[in-house]
Amino acid sequence: MQGILKKNGADRTVRLNKYISDAGYCSRREADRLIEAGRVSVNGQIATMGQKLLSGQRVSIDGQPLAQEKELVLLAVNKPAGIVCTTDKRWGETTIYDLLNYPKRIFSIGRLDKESEGLLLMTNYGDISNEILRAGNYHEKEYLVTVNREVTPAFLKKMSQGIFLEELNVTTRPCKVFLAGKNRFRIILTQGLNRQIRRMCESCGYKVTKLVRVRVMNIELGSLKPGEYRPVNRKEYACLMEMLHNPKKPGKKSDVVKKAMLGNESDIVKREVPGKKSDVAKRKMSEISKEEKRSAGEKQRQRERKR
Image (tube, rainbow, N blue to C red; front, side, top):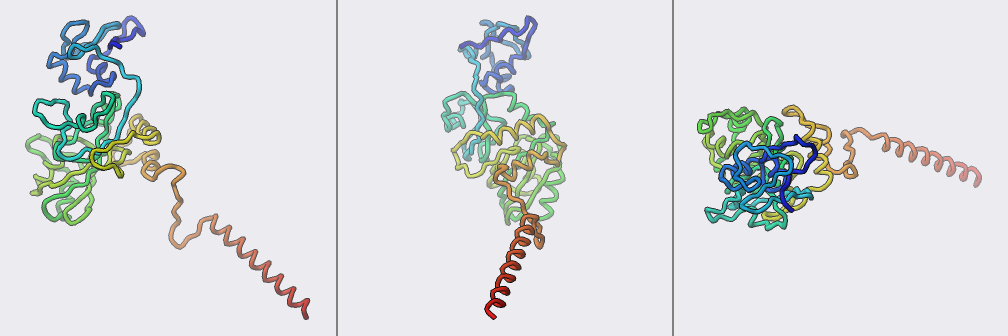
């Protein structure tokens, strides 16, 4: 099946990088790299950056016709340390694609650097990737970080307030940081700067010794072992779509996110305030009390008959 822009109107056009991404070949950013490298052609001609496709035009990558993927794939992967997320094999390193050997063409939504590990979402659908990665949506990503010395309250406060990174000429957004052990902390970011957590720690005089991403929005790493993957389930996907279509202000969780973090609707247990009984419990206690009174009355009548 060739990559042909279907005719839904004579004037319909779409950006080439979006078309490649929607076909499930790679992300828009990676598509731009392919175009820039001269590996993409349209109707047999080398494509140019920013080019738009017209109805009926054919797209090829490395001389092979681009096939449109019909089945949506969205995976939660536990990336081990030492694995890279790029498709570039020039350096001879093991990539996440080599590790998974997935039967369909998929690409990572964002990246984790080589030394980092944990949750990596992978898909064949470009629009999901673009929405998750869009910094303006303030989507949360949570990490468990181990450093080379004791974590102090001053360090946590400084990290949470935002840090100026001289090498990137940017100040990080304020974020949530929590103590997780003597040398460990949890951090929730709403942006994805290059090696952001490592750079932030270095600015505070710390060195990261282990970095694990444990959550992306509502999708959690859970019990996945390094190198394992699982499909994102329907409830997770529905919640993810709700969050992407209705982004909330920074620091606020939508009702659907709160529900997802609690678990399935059937698994939610109402938690009672200590010292207070629920209405159900009150009704049961009332029924028991009435039954005890009836039983006591019956015993009293039996004693009177014996007399």
